[in-house]
Image (cartoon, rainbow, N blue to C red; front, side, top):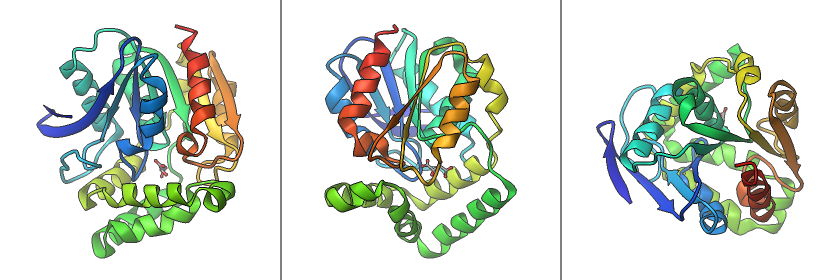
Length: 263
Ligand code: MLT
């Protein structure tokens, strides 16, 4: 489905009834990431899954995509869909950075958070330089060149060996991002604030999910978030890397199913 919010056309899925759960994909992905969650959770919840601007089937804009802008797109979509009830917001990686921005801007809308394969901290100086270099590569060589470099780092060695269909699925998903979307995300992530100090203010139930084999964001980041969050609970999934919801869909959905009993 598509709708117009914040002057752009946004594509999204909206399936099921009950407690609304909004799933926010990471970089440089699309809402296709959440196919196993739409399939596995829309019988117990209202599952809302947007393509962020510049990704998948959503329209792109030029310039930086600050995390606040992407959070405001999610908020505008919820308004458009007339979602009144407090929501659970689940963000994976960059989606988690957007979840922190959403918390800062619209915390009254949130009943709970799910932080998957993400971190609270900001980019290091080295990380910021890398964002610029990657943005330059996307503009000079296209999004496929950046995707190609990322593909071997996204999943567990077990997934590469046993589930080649997931690897090609992920590659297709990454190739669907626009150059504007890729550059906008990179520059937006580069300027995102450090959310570490926010963690001990977040009183709502928060589920932290992380893949044991995540090399892009190590498990230690998830452990520090659990230590700082008053109501945080970490579950580390086996045989899973950065895209744990795709790699271990049954376990991921079971953890969410258990988390939903809090509400
Ligand atoms: C993501 O998966 O969203 C990104 O790898 C996050 C990042 O680059 O910091």
